[in-house]
Length: 289
Length: 296
Image 1 (cartoon, rainbow over the protein chains, first blue to last red):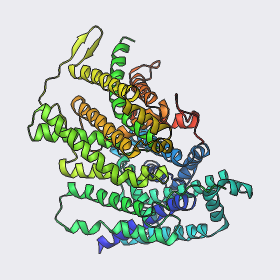
Image 2: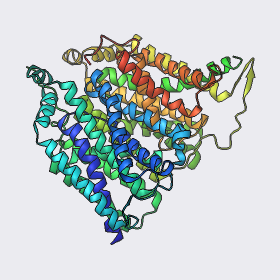
Image 3: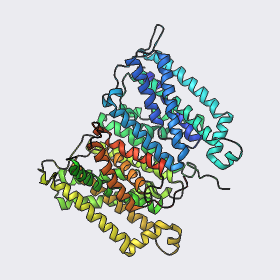
Image 4: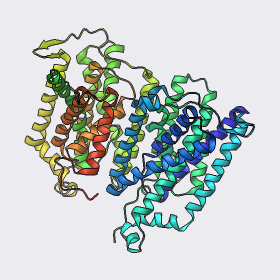
C-alpha cells in the first residue's frame, strides 16, 4: 500500500512537470530543454530556504515558483535570438550551465553533496511524514495545476501560442505579439516546473544535482512525445503510463546496478519508436505562404 | 606566468582530442545538417570496445585496434541507418532527438555490460613524464598531439586533394545538384558517418589512456564538439578544428591563470564550453568562419 501511495505521489509530481512542458513544446513548439533547470531551481529554492532559513510551506512554495518564473526570463532572452534547432541547442547549453553552477557553487548549494534533511511541510497539526497525508497535499497541488493548465490550453492565449508556432508571420500580421506570448508561456511553464521541484524536495527530503540531469529531461520529452505534444489528456495519460511502466521491473530479479540503466534504455527506446512513428508530425516545418 | 608554457601544452593536448572528436561531427553537419548528439558516445564506445579487446580479452594492441575499428564501423552504419537516415527528410531537430535517444541507449547498454565505475586503459602502465625545458609531457601526450596532426592532415588531403573529397564537398554545398550529377549521396553520408565515428573512437581510446573512461563521458564530449562547431562556424570543418584548439586553450587558460588573485575553480572547466555555445549563439551565430549567416 505504501508503495502504491509512493507511485501516486510520483505521478502527481510528474504530471505537473510534464504538462507544463507540454504547454511549451506541444502548443508553442518551443523545444525548451532548460525545463529541467527550472525544476532544479524550484527544488533547490525550497530545499535551501526550508533548511537554512526555516521558511514555512507557503513561503517556500511561492519562492520556488517565483525563482523559476524569473529564470524563464532568461530562457525568453534565448528564444528572442534563436529559432528551432538553435533554440534547442541554446537551452541545452543553458541547462548544462545551470547544472555546472549547482555542482560548483559549493557555498550556496553544497555542490555534489546535495541538500539533506529537508523537512516535510508543516501545516497546522497535520503530519506530512505520513505519506498518505503528503499524497493529499501533492494531489491537491497537481489537481489545481491540471485545472489551471487545462484552462490555459483552452483559452485565447493558447490559440495565440499555437498560431505563432504554426505561422509566425501570419500571427504577427494579425497583431499577436509573438515574443510576448512565447515569454509568457515560458514563465508559466517554468513556474509550474518550479512548483514540481519544490514538491520533489519536500517529498524526497534530499536533493543533489544528479537528479536534474539530461536524463530527467529525456524522460519529460518522452512523456510529452508519447502523449502527443499539444494534447492535454494525452500527456496526462502518458505521464501516468510512463511513471508506472518500469515498476514491474522491480519485481524481477535484476541487480540494482542494471535496473537503472535498463529504465533509461526503455525510455530511450520508447522515445525513439514514438519519434519514428510520428516523424512527419513532430517539429512541423513552418508554413510557407 | 611561469606555468604558461605548460598551460599551452595542456591546451594543445586537450585541443587535439577535441579536434579529433569534433571533426567527424562537423563533417556530418556540413553534409546533411545532421546534429549527431550520439557522436561523443562513439568516443565512449571506441574506448570501451578497445578496453574489452585489449584488457578483458587480452588481445594485443594491433588486434584490438582492428577489432575496435571493425565493430565501430558496423555500429556507425547501423546507427546511421536506423537513427539518422529515416529522419533526414524532415526537421533537423528530429535527428537531434533520435540521436539523443541513441546516446542514452549506448550509455545504458555500456553501463549494463561494464558497470558504471570509472575505468582506465592505462592500467598497469608506467607513463612517466619527460621534462623538455619548462614543460612536463608524457610520451602518450606526444602521441596524442602528433596523431591528431597526422590524422587531421590525412583528412585534409582526402577532402581537398582526392576525387572522393571533391564529391564530399559537392554534396556538402548542394545535395540535390550533386545527386543529379550522379554522386551517390547515400555513399557519401555512409563514409562520413563511419569516418567520423572512427576518428571519435580513436579520440576516445586516447582519452581512455590519458585519463579515464566512464559510460557517461559521451554527452560531455558531444557538447564540447558542439561548442567547437559553433565557435568555428557551423558547416566549416577547419573552423571546427580551430574551434577545438581554441576551446582547449580557453579551458586551460581560464583554469590555470591567476586573474589578479582569483582563479576559476577547476570544476567549472566543462561549463566553459556551455557558456561558449551560448555566447556564440547569442552574439555571432555563424561562428568565426561560418557560411553566410543562417536565418536565425
